[in-house]
Image (cartoon, rainbow, N blue to C red; front, side, top):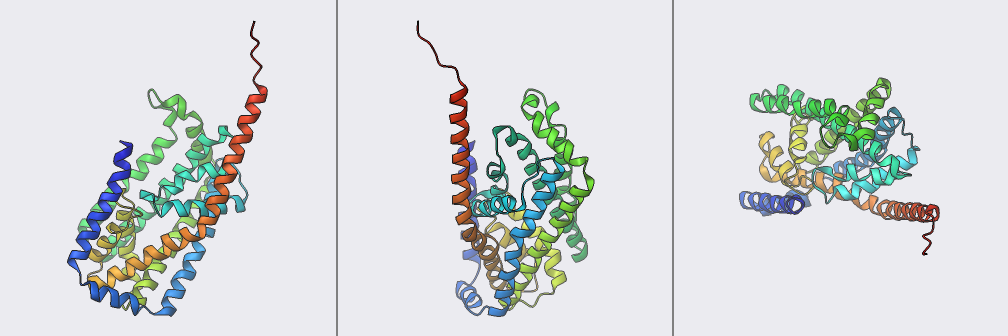
Length: 315
């Protein structure tokens, strides 16, 4: 099963790339990329730089709601470190790994995991709502039903998280995780603040996609991009490719029919470069530092546990 999780995204990525490259004019794609307007590119990358700071506000809001307060700078470092992992893990898996960068003791791991899962589910819920609104706007009945159906997943997950400790067999192991989620729901203002920031985070994603499409000459309106991009991003979250590359691109090409495939693919390629690779490079320095900090904390904890262990006396 673990091998499948590693192999499937790689196979999916290769398969999608073969499909894309065999269905477009590579020369036209190259020309679109080389002729990208530097002003639109600069604006897109500038907006991208705001995302880690917004994401950290969202994370801190949920942590405060779960009675697991962490300094904003600590949240920012964890988010930046996770961004590097998101560039190589499917379905933005780095967002869940970041809990290891936030914990100060082993007892915090389970409740932090609960808050991280809650943050992820609420994030997907916001994306589904944006996708539904976009589908209704463009009048696509198929995607409207798909988005409405997709809403069932995060809603069900939110209900399950608070009751995770009641699951047969493994419930006892999830007691702290479920308790953290129930605690968070008792702070609706903080959870609401996190959701509002999540909407702002996704709005910056839409703005980045719009700027990059315009940079390669796509004659698209902001409303069209806002309607189609959430659906494409949602497809990209499926764990069948690396960082959603290929799947997200193909979905947007299908939704934005007013531009040529080559132009849309050029814009989505630049989106991957900005939102994933660019932020991943920035996060690399923090990934190394946070990893070393976690190793040092675990080492100190193990040494402390050894000191408390009574010596064995041989008789």
